[in-house]
Every structure is written in C-alpha cells, then in structure tokens.
Length: 300
Ligand SMILES: [Zn+2]
Image (cartoon, rainbow, N blue to C red; front, side):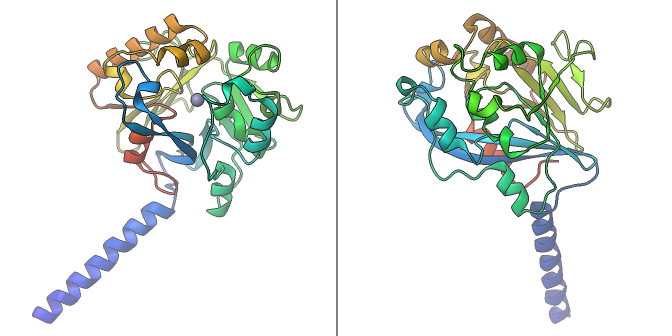
C-alpha cells in the first residue's frame, strides 16, 4: 500500500512536471494568450523614469509582445532587432547617446521565434515608431505593419527633424504599411477603438501624447485576465497610480506633447480605479513584465 502510494505520487509528480514543461514550451492554439519576448535590457535609477521615483536601479526592458488568437499571431512592437547596432551607429544623435542606450546581449524577437520553431510573423502593430520599438521591423520582411495615420506622417518625416524615428528602421521601400482605422466606437473611456478580431478580446485605442500617433492595446486572455499595453505613455507602472509624468528631462526629450501624455496617464489611473483587476504593462517596465514571465512562457 505504502509502495503503491509512493509510486502513485511519483507519477502525479511526473505528470505535473510534464504539464509545466508543455505550458512553457507550447503556445496555446485555442483562445487568446500572449507572450512577452524580451530582446534586451539595461538598468536605470527609478528617478529617471518618473517624477518621484526612488534612487534604486530598476530593469528597463525592450520587448516585443506576441499576441495569439486561435493560432493567429501578431507582434505588438518589435523590441531591439538583429541590426540594432548598425541602426544605432547610423541614426542615434551623438548628444543623445548618454541618455539612450541598451545593454548586451541583444536577443532579437525574430531569432527567438525561429529557434522555438515559430512561423514568421505576418503582422506587426506598433505602439509608436521610436527606435526601440521599430528596430526589428526589417527582420520580418513582407509583414504588414499597422500604424495610425498621424504616426505614418511622422514616419514619412524620419530623418528630417524627428530624430527618435530612424530611416535605417522605417525608411526601406519594402515595408508594407497599413493604417489603423479606429472604426469600432468608444471603448473603456477611449472615444475610438479598433476591435481587431471582432470579439472584444484584443482592442486597439489611440493614445496620442508620447507621439502624435501612439496606440494602446487591451487584451483579455482566455482565462478572463485583463491587460492594457500602454507603450511609452509611462515607463513605469508605478507612475500610473500616482499619476506622475516622466522625469522632466526625459519628458522634454521624448514626449511630443507632455500635456496630452499626462492626460493619458490620468486616464489610465482612472481606468485602474474602475477596474483594479486590470494589469497595465508599460513597454519598458521590467518589474511588471518579469512577473508575467517571458517567452517561451505564455499568459493565457
Ligand atoms: Zn520606448
């Protein structure tokens, strides 16, 4: 009896271990899930990320979000791509380099997906077109790239004033740009939205402020968990509940419209008050993203 019990326990343990291994390795083919592909990171004092942040260093990450809906994948942002070093050398203004840089190693989303046996992604939605979000576009030739019309106007001016949007990343003639049309009406406090699959699980909303064409993304996973990916509207989720803007210098350097950006932060703060179960995921917040886990793990 004792032996049988322990053999039984052994097999239960093996089954549990196999289940854990398969949830880390295999992407769910049914329902809605996402995986955060971390392509690089660096450390920064929290005080550089938002006003009122502490002196302790926190991890700033550069991630692509792989969203899966019944086996159809798209990327929200690309993180740092395979050619980031040459792009940086060519297009990052020298005076900005002490403020904007990344650590090594870089593991591009394209390489991580290929290594795990994923087919090439056919669609990429950009939260905005700054260098640390658009770097990997050229790694996915032929993919549709979704941006808003105002963001496309900025992209067309790349190299002529807007120095966070780089010709080496968005200037190629082979990129298939597609306009996001917010035709789905009001959604959770946003006046306009685009319900990507028509079932309310993945909804894009305009979040103009950080750039004139920034986009946020709501995702409701199969288990009913609710997330909002807010791009660079804030760099740290801690800034949201306190409704704090970025560190003043960062704000001056990166936010196209500081007033509109702060209105968006206040909007997210109100959203969280109405829905405490909503997890807001800023593009660079390593603390929030590490808690959710990285590719090849999935949130579903
Ligand atoms: Zn960014």
